[in-house]
Image (cartoon, rainbow, N blue to C red; front, side):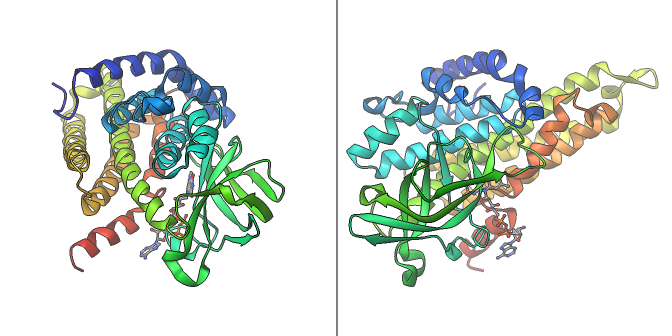
Length: 381
Ligand SMILES: Cc1cc2nc3c(=O)[nH]c(=O)nc-3n(C[C@H](O)[C@H](O)[C@H](O)COP(=O)(O)OP(=O)(O)OC[C@H]3O[C@@H](n4cnc5c(N)ncnc54)[C@H](O)[C@@H]3O)c2cc1C
Protein backbone atom coordinates (compact mmCIF):
# COMPACT_ATOMS: atom_id res chain seq x y z
CA UNK A 1 0.00 0.00 0.00
CA UNK A 2 1.30 3.47 -0.89
CA UNK A 3 2.23 5.87 1.90
CA UNK A 4 -0.65 8.15 2.94
CA UNK A 5 0.88 11.25 1.35
CA UNK A 6 0.15 9.72 -2.06
CA UNK A 7 -3.39 9.65 -3.48
CA UNK A 8 -4.78 7.83 -6.53
CA UNK A 9 -3.85 10.74 -8.84
CA UNK A 10 -0.25 10.53 -7.66
CA UNK A 11 -0.21 6.80 -8.29
CA UNK A 12 -1.63 7.32 -11.78
CA UNK A 13 1.10 9.88 -12.43
CA UNK A 14 3.66 7.37 -11.11
CA UNK A 15 2.53 4.80 -13.67
CA UNK A 16 2.75 7.39 -16.47
CA UNK A 17 6.25 8.53 -15.52
CA UNK A 18 7.36 4.91 -15.07
CA UNK A 19 6.25 4.05 -18.62
CA UNK A 20 8.14 7.06 -19.94
CA UNK A 21 11.28 6.12 -17.99
CA UNK A 22 11.19 2.49 -19.11
CA UNK A 23 10.82 3.48 -22.75
CA UNK A 24 12.71 6.74 -23.17
CA UNK A 25 15.31 6.96 -20.40
CA UNK A 26 16.45 3.63 -18.90
CA UNK A 27 17.47 2.05 -22.24
CA UNK A 28 19.87 4.94 -22.84
CA UNK A 29 21.33 5.40 -19.33
CA UNK A 30 24.55 3.51 -20.09
CA UNK A 31 25.05 5.15 -23.49
CA UNK A 32 24.56 8.64 -22.02
CA UNK A 33 26.96 7.87 -19.19
CA UNK A 34 29.68 6.71 -21.62
CA UNK A 35 29.09 9.69 -23.88
CA UNK A 36 29.11 12.09 -20.90
CA UNK A 37 25.90 13.76 -22.04
CA UNK A 38 22.16 13.28 -22.45
CA UNK A 39 20.30 14.92 -25.36
CA UNK A 40 19.19 18.48 -24.64
CA UNK A 41 16.00 17.60 -26.54
CA UNK A 42 15.00 15.64 -23.42
CA UNK A 43 14.10 18.96 -21.77
CA UNK A 44 11.61 19.70 -24.52
CA UNK A 45 10.29 16.14 -24.38
CA UNK A 46 9.77 16.45 -20.61
CA UNK A 47 8.08 19.82 -21.20
CA UNK A 48 5.78 18.31 -23.82
CA UNK A 49 4.72 15.64 -21.31
CA UNK A 50 4.04 18.32 -18.69
CA UNK A 51 6.73 16.94 -16.36
CA UNK A 52 8.65 20.20 -15.87
CA UNK A 53 5.73 22.02 -14.30
CA UNK A 54 3.84 19.35 -12.40
CA UNK A 55 3.55 21.51 -9.27
CA UNK A 56 3.22 24.86 -11.07
CA UNK A 57 0.04 26.85 -11.83
CA UNK A 58 -1.75 26.08 -15.10
CA UNK A 59 -1.70 29.76 -16.11
CA UNK A 60 2.05 29.43 -16.70
CA UNK A 61 1.81 26.11 -18.50
CA UNK A 62 2.11 23.97 -15.36
CA UNK A 63 -0.11 21.05 -14.38
CA UNK A 64 -1.50 22.65 -11.22
CA UNK A 65 -0.44 19.70 -9.04
CA UNK A 66 1.23 19.69 -5.63
CA UNK A 67 4.81 19.12 -4.48
CA UNK A 68 4.03 15.42 -3.99
CA UNK A 69 3.46 15.11 -7.76
CA UNK A 70 6.94 16.47 -8.35
CA UNK A 71 8.36 14.01 -5.83
CA UNK A 72 6.62 11.14 -7.60
CA UNK A 73 8.30 12.18 -10.83
CA UNK A 74 11.76 12.41 -9.25
CA UNK A 75 11.29 9.03 -7.52
CA UNK A 76 10.48 7.48 -10.87
CA UNK A 77 13.23 9.24 -12.84
CA UNK A 78 15.91 7.78 -10.57
CA UNK A 79 14.61 4.30 -11.41
CA UNK A 80 16.09 4.87 -14.87
CA UNK A 81 19.45 3.96 -13.34
CA UNK A 82 20.80 7.33 -14.48
CA UNK A 83 21.74 9.81 -11.78
CA UNK A 84 22.83 12.58 -14.13
CA UNK A 85 19.60 12.86 -16.08
CA UNK A 86 17.32 13.41 -13.03
CA UNK A 87 19.89 15.83 -11.65
CA UNK A 88 19.81 18.00 -14.79
CA UNK A 89 16.02 17.93 -14.80
CA UNK A 90 15.83 18.70 -11.06
CA UNK A 91 17.95 21.84 -11.46
CA UNK A 92 15.43 23.12 -13.98
CA UNK A 93 12.14 21.83 -12.54
CA UNK A 94 12.98 21.78 -8.85
CA UNK A 95 15.31 24.74 -8.29
CA UNK A 96 14.95 27.38 -10.96
CA UNK A 97 11.30 27.09 -12.03
CA UNK A 98 9.82 27.36 -8.49
CA UNK A 99 12.02 30.40 -7.70
CA UNK A 100 10.84 32.05 -10.93
CA UNK A 101 7.25 31.34 -10.05
CA UNK A 102 7.58 32.68 -6.54
CA UNK A 103 9.70 35.79 -7.13
CA UNK A 104 9.49 36.57 -10.86
CA UNK A 105 7.74 39.61 -12.35
CA UNK A 106 5.00 38.95 -14.92
CA UNK A 107 7.49 39.80 -17.67
CA UNK A 108 10.08 37.36 -16.25
CA UNK A 109 7.39 34.71 -16.03
CA UNK A 110 6.60 35.17 -19.72
CA UNK A 111 10.26 35.31 -20.79
CA UNK A 112 11.75 32.62 -18.55
CA UNK A 113 9.20 30.66 -16.52
CA UNK A 114 6.82 29.67 -19.31
CA UNK A 115 9.48 28.61 -21.86
CA UNK A 116 11.33 26.74 -19.08
CA UNK A 117 8.21 24.80 -18.11
CA UNK A 118 7.79 23.98 -21.80
CA UNK A 119 11.43 22.81 -21.92
CA UNK A 120 12.22 25.33 -24.64
CA UNK A 121 14.69 27.24 -22.48
CA UNK A 122 17.20 25.42 -20.30
CA UNK A 123 18.27 26.84 -16.95
CA UNK A 124 21.19 26.44 -14.59
CA UNK A 125 21.72 27.63 -11.04
CA UNK A 126 24.87 29.56 -10.13
CA UNK A 127 25.63 29.67 -6.43
CA UNK A 128 28.94 27.86 -5.87
CA UNK A 129 32.27 29.57 -6.48
CA UNK A 130 35.85 28.36 -6.18
CA UNK A 131 36.04 29.90 -2.69
CA UNK A 132 32.38 29.61 -1.77
CA UNK A 133 31.00 26.07 -1.67
CA UNK A 134 29.88 25.18 1.83
CA UNK A 135 30.54 28.75 2.90
CA UNK A 136 28.05 30.59 0.70
CA UNK A 137 28.68 33.83 2.57
CA UNK A 138 32.06 33.96 0.83
CA UNK A 139 30.49 34.53 -2.60
CA UNK A 140 32.67 37.05 -4.42
CA UNK A 141 30.68 37.62 -7.62
CA UNK A 142 29.35 41.16 -7.63
CA UNK A 143 26.60 42.96 -9.52
CA UNK A 144 26.98 46.74 -9.48
CA UNK A 145 24.19 48.99 -10.70
CA UNK A 146 25.42 51.38 -13.38
CA UNK A 147 22.58 53.45 -14.86
CA UNK A 148 19.96 50.99 -16.01
CA UNK A 149 22.33 48.00 -16.11
CA UNK A 150 24.01 45.69 -13.61
CA UNK A 151 27.71 45.08 -14.25
CA UNK A 152 28.55 41.53 -13.18
CA UNK A 153 32.05 40.31 -12.32
CA UNK A 154 33.16 36.99 -10.87
CA UNK A 155 32.98 33.26 -11.51
CA UNK A 156 30.94 30.19 -10.59
CA UNK A 157 31.95 26.55 -10.53
CA UNK A 158 30.34 23.08 -10.56
CA UNK A 159 27.35 24.43 -12.46
CA UNK A 160 24.98 21.65 -13.56
CA UNK A 161 23.42 22.23 -17.03
CA UNK A 162 25.87 25.12 -17.43
CA UNK A 163 27.05 24.02 -20.85
CA UNK A 164 23.64 23.70 -22.46
CA UNK A 165 21.73 26.31 -20.45
CA UNK A 166 20.22 29.39 -22.11
CA UNK A 167 20.38 31.37 -18.88
CA UNK A 168 21.60 31.19 -15.31
CA UNK A 169 19.80 31.98 -12.09
CA UNK A 170 22.75 33.74 -10.53
CA UNK A 171 23.57 34.60 -6.93
CA UNK A 172 25.68 37.78 -6.73
CA UNK A 173 26.50 40.41 -4.14
CA UNK A 174 24.80 43.73 -4.67
CA UNK A 175 25.80 45.19 -1.29
CA UNK A 176 29.09 43.44 -0.40
CA UNK A 177 29.34 45.27 2.94
CA UNK A 178 26.06 43.75 4.19
CA UNK A 179 27.16 40.07 4.33
CA UNK A 180 24.23 37.68 3.93
CA UNK A 181 21.92 40.67 3.60
CA UNK A 182 23.75 41.88 0.50
CA UNK A 183 22.94 39.07 -1.95
CA UNK A 184 20.58 39.32 -4.92
CA UNK A 185 19.32 36.93 -7.59
CA UNK A 186 19.61 37.60 -11.31
CA UNK A 187 18.46 35.98 -14.53
CA UNK A 188 21.43 36.28 -16.84
CA UNK A 189 21.24 35.27 -20.50
CA UNK A 190 24.09 33.21 -21.85
CA UNK A 191 24.44 35.35 -24.98
CA UNK A 192 25.37 38.53 -23.06
CA UNK A 193 28.79 39.98 -23.73
CA UNK A 194 31.24 39.20 -20.92
CA UNK A 195 29.53 35.89 -20.02
CA UNK A 196 31.84 32.95 -20.80
CA UNK A 197 31.35 29.24 -20.23
CA UNK A 198 34.45 27.30 -19.15
CA UNK A 199 35.34 23.78 -20.15
CA UNK A 200 33.35 20.80 -19.01
CA UNK A 201 34.44 19.40 -15.65
CA UNK A 202 35.10 15.63 -15.84
CA UNK A 203 33.45 13.81 -12.94
CA UNK A 204 33.57 10.46 -11.12
CA UNK A 205 29.82 9.96 -11.44
CA UNK A 206 26.67 11.71 -12.71
CA UNK A 207 28.62 11.72 -15.94
CA UNK A 208 25.79 12.41 -18.37
CA UNK A 209 25.04 15.69 -16.61
CA UNK A 210 27.18 18.60 -17.81
CA UNK A 211 29.09 20.53 -15.14
CA UNK A 212 31.05 23.69 -15.93
CA UNK A 213 32.57 26.89 -14.68
CA UNK A 214 30.99 30.22 -15.61
CA UNK A 215 32.89 33.50 -15.91
CA UNK A 216 31.59 37.06 -15.79
CA UNK A 217 33.85 39.84 -16.96
CA UNK A 218 32.09 43.22 -16.93
CA UNK A 219 28.99 41.42 -18.13
CA UNK A 220 26.21 43.99 -18.50
CA UNK A 221 22.71 42.75 -17.74
CA UNK A 222 19.64 45.00 -17.87
CA UNK A 223 18.29 46.18 -14.49
CA UNK A 224 15.25 44.01 -15.24
CA UNK A 225 17.48 40.93 -14.78
CA UNK A 226 17.10 41.32 -11.00
CA UNK A 227 14.83 38.55 -9.68
CA UNK A 228 12.82 39.36 -6.57
CA UNK A 229 13.95 42.04 -4.16
CA UNK A 230 17.43 43.49 -4.20
CA UNK A 231 19.58 42.31 -1.25
CA UNK A 232 17.05 39.59 -0.31
CA UNK A 233 18.55 36.91 -2.53
CA UNK A 234 19.93 34.84 0.30
CA UNK A 235 16.60 34.37 2.05
CA UNK A 236 14.92 33.70 -1.29
CA UNK A 237 17.40 31.04 -2.34
CA UNK A 238 17.60 29.37 1.09
CA UNK A 239 13.84 28.97 1.11
CA UNK A 240 14.14 27.15 -2.18
CA UNK A 241 17.22 25.15 -1.26
CA UNK A 242 15.51 23.64 1.75
CA UNK A 243 12.50 22.48 -0.27
CA UNK A 244 14.80 21.00 -2.88
CA UNK A 245 16.92 19.25 -0.25
CA UNK A 246 13.79 17.45 0.86
CA UNK A 247 12.85 16.47 -2.69
CA UNK A 248 16.47 15.50 -3.32
CA UNK A 249 16.39 13.24 -0.26
CA UNK A 250 13.23 11.57 -1.60
CA UNK A 251 15.00 10.91 -4.92
CA UNK A 252 18.15 9.68 -3.21
CA UNK A 253 16.36 7.13 -1.09
CA UNK A 254 14.15 6.01 -3.99
CA UNK A 255 17.41 5.32 -5.82
CA UNK A 256 18.57 3.16 -2.90
CA UNK A 257 15.31 1.21 -3.02
CA UNK A 258 15.77 0.65 -6.74
CA UNK A 259 19.30 -0.67 -6.19
CA UNK A 260 17.94 -3.18 -3.67
CA UNK A 261 15.33 -4.34 -6.23
CA UNK A 262 17.99 -4.85 -8.89
CA UNK A 263 20.22 -6.69 -6.43
CA UNK A 264 17.47 -9.01 -5.23
CA UNK A 265 16.79 -10.04 -8.83
CA UNK A 266 20.49 -10.69 -9.38
CA UNK A 267 21.25 -12.67 -6.23
CA UNK A 268 18.22 -14.89 -6.74
CA UNK A 269 19.52 -16.10 -10.10
CA UNK A 270 23.32 -15.98 -9.75
CA UNK A 271 24.67 -19.24 -8.31
CA UNK A 272 27.90 -19.60 -6.32
CA UNK A 273 29.08 -22.97 -5.03
CA UNK A 274 25.96 -24.49 -6.60
CA UNK A 275 23.42 -22.25 -4.79
CA UNK A 276 21.91 -18.83 -5.49
CA UNK A 277 23.71 -16.02 -3.63
CA UNK A 278 20.31 -15.20 -2.09
CA UNK A 279 20.25 -18.54 -0.29
CA UNK A 280 23.19 -17.52 1.91
CA UNK A 281 22.13 -16.03 5.20
CA UNK A 282 24.82 -13.38 5.09
CA UNK A 283 23.19 -11.93 1.96
CA UNK A 284 19.66 -12.36 3.28
CA UNK A 285 20.63 -10.36 6.37
CA UNK A 286 22.57 -7.76 4.42
CA UNK A 287 19.61 -7.12 2.12
CA UNK A 288 17.16 -7.15 5.04
CA UNK A 289 19.27 -4.58 6.90
CA UNK A 290 19.51 -2.42 3.78
CA UNK A 291 15.73 -2.58 3.30
CA UNK A 292 15.15 -1.61 6.94
CA UNK A 293 17.44 1.42 6.67
CA UNK A 294 15.77 2.55 3.45
CA UNK A 295 12.31 2.14 4.96
CA UNK A 296 13.27 4.23 8.01
CA UNK A 297 14.90 7.01 5.97
CA UNK A 298 12.04 7.11 3.47
CA UNK A 299 9.48 7.40 6.24
CA UNK A 300 11.38 10.32 7.76
CA UNK A 301 11.27 12.01 4.33
CA UNK A 302 7.52 11.44 3.92
CA UNK A 303 6.73 12.62 7.46
CA UNK A 304 8.88 15.74 7.02
CA UNK A 305 7.23 16.36 3.67
CA UNK A 306 3.81 16.02 5.25
CA UNK A 307 4.77 18.70 7.80
CA UNK A 308 6.27 20.90 5.05
CA UNK A 309 3.04 20.66 3.05
CA UNK A 310 1.12 21.83 6.10
CA UNK A 311 3.11 25.06 6.21
CA UNK A 312 5.77 24.05 8.71
CA UNK A 313 9.38 24.76 7.90
CA UNK A 314 11.21 21.92 9.68
CA UNK A 315 14.82 22.93 8.91
CA UNK A 316 16.31 20.40 11.33
CA UNK A 317 14.36 17.45 9.93
CA UNK A 318 15.08 18.49 6.32
CA UNK A 319 18.80 18.46 7.10
CA UNK A 320 18.31 15.07 8.82
CA UNK A 321 16.59 13.75 5.70
CA UNK A 322 19.41 14.91 3.44
CA UNK A 323 22.25 13.49 5.52
CA UNK A 324 20.47 10.24 6.40
CA UNK A 325 19.30 9.51 2.85
CA UNK A 326 22.69 10.38 1.33
CA UNK A 327 24.57 8.12 3.72
CA UNK A 328 22.03 5.31 3.53
CA UNK A 329 22.02 5.41 -0.26
CA UNK A 330 25.79 5.13 -0.45
CA UNK A 331 25.94 2.31 2.13
CA UNK A 332 23.22 0.44 0.26
CA UNK A 333 24.99 1.05 -3.06
CA UNK A 334 28.15 -0.44 -1.58
CA UNK A 335 26.32 -3.54 -0.32
CA UNK A 336 24.63 -3.93 -3.69
CA UNK A 337 27.76 -3.65 -5.83
CA UNK A 338 29.39 -6.21 -3.53
CA UNK A 339 26.55 -8.65 -4.20
CA UNK A 340 27.23 -8.40 -7.94
CA UNK A 341 30.90 -9.33 -7.44
CA UNK A 342 33.15 -8.56 -10.42
CA UNK A 343 30.13 -8.02 -12.67
CA UNK A 344 29.07 -5.09 -10.52
CA UNK A 345 32.35 -3.41 -11.31
CA UNK A 346 31.77 -3.61 -15.07
CA UNK A 347 29.59 -1.44 -17.28
CA UNK A 348 27.50 -4.51 -18.12
CA UNK A 349 25.30 -3.84 -15.09
CA UNK A 350 23.79 -0.53 -13.99
CA UNK A 351 24.78 -1.04 -10.36
CA UNK A 352 28.38 0.19 -10.86
CA UNK A 353 27.15 3.42 -12.40
CA UNK A 354 24.58 3.88 -9.62
CA UNK A 355 27.29 3.32 -6.99
CA UNK A 356 29.41 6.07 -8.58
CA UNK A 357 26.45 8.42 -8.91
CA UNK A 358 25.34 7.80 -5.31
CA UNK A 359 28.51 9.32 -3.87
CA UNK A 360 27.51 12.84 -4.88
CA UNK A 361 24.50 12.90 -2.55
CA UNK A 362 26.85 13.27 0.43
CA UNK A 363 28.56 16.31 -1.12
CA UNK A 364 26.33 18.30 -3.49
CA UNK A 365 23.63 20.74 -2.40
CA UNK A 366 25.11 20.92 1.12
CA UNK A 367 27.54 18.26 2.37
CA UNK A 368 26.96 15.81 5.23
CA UNK A 369 29.06 17.98 7.53
CA UNK A 370 27.03 21.10 6.73
CA UNK A 371 23.76 19.21 7.33
CA UNK A 372 25.10 18.01 10.69
CA UNK A 373 26.07 21.61 11.53
CA UNK A 374 22.47 22.71 10.86
CA UNK A 375 21.08 19.90 13.00
CA UNK A 376 23.51 20.61 15.84
CA UNK A 377 22.63 24.32 15.81
CA UNK A 378 18.92 23.49 15.93
CA UNK A 379 19.69 21.29 18.94
CA UNK A 380 21.13 24.34 20.68
CA UNK A 381 24.78 23.21 20.34
C1 LIG B 1 28.41 17.20 -9.68
C2 LIG B 1 28.15 18.47 -8.95
C3 LIG B 1 27.10 19.29 -9.34
C4 LIG B 1 26.89 20.52 -8.70
N1 LIG B 1 25.91 21.36 -9.17
C5 LIG B 1 25.84 22.63 -8.68
C6 LIG B 1 24.97 23.59 -9.30
O1 LIG B 1 24.23 23.30 -10.25
N2 LIG B 1 24.98 24.86 -8.81
C7 LIG B 1 25.78 25.24 -7.74
O2 LIG B 1 25.73 26.39 -7.36
N3 LIG B 1 26.59 24.33 -7.14
C8 LIG B 1 26.66 23.05 -7.58
N4 LIG B 1 27.52 22.13 -7.00
C9 LIG B 1 28.34 22.54 -5.87
C10 LIG B 1 28.06 21.82 -4.57
O3 LIG B 1 26.87 22.24 -4.00
C11 LIG B 1 29.29 22.03 -3.68
O4 LIG B 1 30.31 21.20 -4.22
C12 LIG B 1 29.06 21.70 -2.23
O5 LIG B 1 28.19 22.65 -1.65
C13 LIG B 1 30.36 21.64 -1.41
O6 LIG B 1 31.15 22.76 -1.64
P1 LIG B 1 32.71 22.58 -2.04
O7 LIG B 1 32.76 21.61 -3.15
O8 LIG B 1 33.29 23.92 -2.28
O9 LIG B 1 33.37 21.92 -0.79
P2 LIG B 1 34.05 22.70 0.46
O10 LIG B 1 33.14 23.76 0.94
O11 LIG B 1 35.43 23.06 0.07
O12 LIG B 1 34.10 21.54 1.54
C14 LIG B 1 35.12 20.52 1.55
C15 LIG B 1 34.89 19.62 2.76
O13 LIG B 1 34.97 20.38 3.95
C16 LIG B 1 33.79 20.17 4.71
N5 LIG B 1 33.42 21.37 5.48
C17 LIG B 1 33.09 22.57 4.99
N6 LIG B 1 32.74 23.41 5.97
C18 LIG B 1 32.86 22.70 7.12
C19 LIG B 1 32.63 23.01 8.50
N7 LIG B 1 32.20 24.21 8.89
N8 LIG B 1 32.84 22.03 9.41
C20 LIG B 1 33.28 20.82 9.02
N9 LIG B 1 33.50 20.47 7.74
C21 LIG B 1 33.30 21.39 6.81
C22 LIG B 1 32.73 19.82 3.73
O14 LIG B 1 31.67 19.12 4.33
C23 LIG B 1 33.50 18.98 2.74
O15 LIG B 1 33.57 17.65 3.21
C24 LIG B 1 27.71 20.88 -7.61
C25 LIG B 1 28.74 20.04 -7.20
C26 LIG B 1 28.99 18.87 -7.86
C27 LIG B 1 30.14 18.02 -7.41
